[in-house]
Image (cartoon, helix red, strand yellow):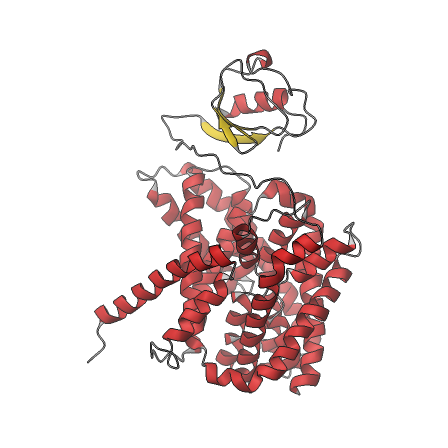
Length: 488
């Protein structure tokens, strides 16, 4: 039977549906979704039940670039700026020095274990150096674990911002290996150039994007999401064309847009949350199809040894050195070390040597894939237990999203804004009517201890309350002055 477009469409649809269904296994048993999606891809592949022969690293890389661009932008857009701002220095240290140290230590042991050249070994270290926050928080949410203190924002910032650095190191080392006449100084210069151009393009495009989103008058809400997709890919393309880091640019674009207010922000966030999930499914399935399980057997023993080195030596060394100037306890550093789960990015980066035609590219890809699987399986499975043993599990329940929203527009000058009254507070114990809030600020819902309260003028406010208010901008500034000493 000839393979028609309809058959291909049905196969793709079945794989996507199965990916959504197996997500319930992750929720119930805490199995990382990465493993489940990859397993589906491998089962559908040429050595699995599906029998789909797929061995195209070029197509895989192109699909991966599109998917990672969306995933990184969505991660930046969702980054809670107020919380990560307090750990910015620590996060940047982990995303730069932490990545470089992990790559160096892991690369050194790769050199002795795999007998590759020093530059190829360091390339393996660079490929494996980034972490996956999505896998971490999916496991924590599935087990109902909320972390203490600054751990959550730090891990979120580190994982979102260390992917571009890993990409930069990988591209720089591949350039050095394939152009042996280039000096190490030239490679370092290329790395710095990509960083600087990536930051500049991301910042400029954030200003342009914010202006267009708020000023252009589109007749349909759904067109704003399409507008942002166009701006997102324009940012990546422009940065890459200028020899900068496209991945860094789109992540920075997401972060800078996420900290600002713009039209239809809530619907945009929902749209990119769904789009990022779809991108992850397509990405993991494609990577799973590219893997031939029989080729993993010869690398199992060295791969297991390198995985142990990554988990128990390379990552902890990088964390303890990178966080040395900052005030974190030994327990917190141990936990951050353990949370260094590898994800899709290392497997995607492992396709770069294949495309570049590096001699030991097949060995590099299989080793990286095996190490990622062991990392997710071991660290992901024991993550909740480690959090409890180190006494880093917060007793506070995770914050729930307010079950109410409104779409602002020309006819509705007000928009919904959420604030939290922290402890201590000058309004604790006072009724709403006593506060004399401005007319343009209307509290429509209060979240307290996991329950929701529909307020009246006689409702008494308490420290820890989260207020959802329909407000105009001028009224919001006045209300914050009345309600807050240190509102979040």
